[in-house]
Length: 32
Image (cartoon, rainbow, N blue to C red; front, side):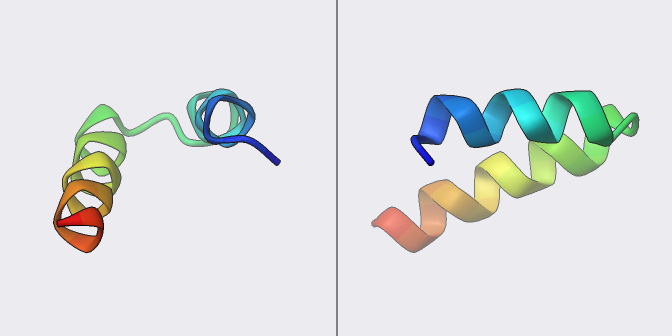
């Protein structure tokens, strides 16, 4: 899966916007 496909899946399956923001922040830290 590409990052975009995963992001679409996350947005579809997770309703909590703050949790999605947390996941994106964690991704940024892991990439650094």
